[in-house]
Image: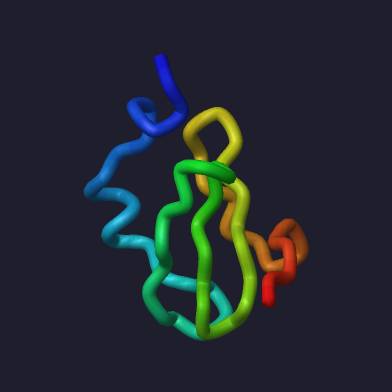
Length: 60
């Protein structure tokens, strides 16, 4: 099973950035949720989005 297949699409649509409450974009390539407004990428591990700012990586 691929990482993408194990992620519930409805759950992804319901999630927002914990910092800005803005929308998130799913990146299948890096298996993460990207908040463009906060310039953060939140990892998805074992199909579970880790929505902690301390776990996010900064993006340009």
